[in-house]
Image 1 (cartoon, rainbow, N blue to C red):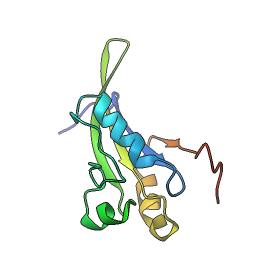
Image 2: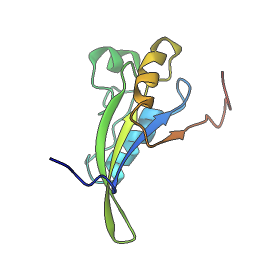
Image 3: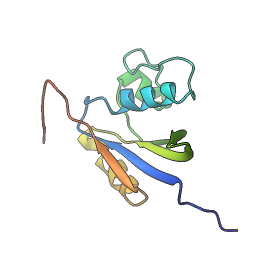
Length: 116
């Protein structure tokens, strides 16, 4: 069974730790109508940080994917968003995600700037 993938994109959200990857993803979920309220990393209500350890520590440990519908010029697109970890200990999760991405959004902290 084949499926037309011309209107489907896999987009990764990548950055160093605490740059706002999960927060950005939570905003996308809210503004596309998937979530009715904003999830927050600092209070453990982020949809993308589903593991108890992630909620307790306030960091992303495993890459998580969700799908959002995005309308552009009157056409509906399916955007698969992959929220990746930023902590160096979980770099392998980011590397695994790279295989399926069509593109990525790189986030930079406005206060800390570019970090190694």
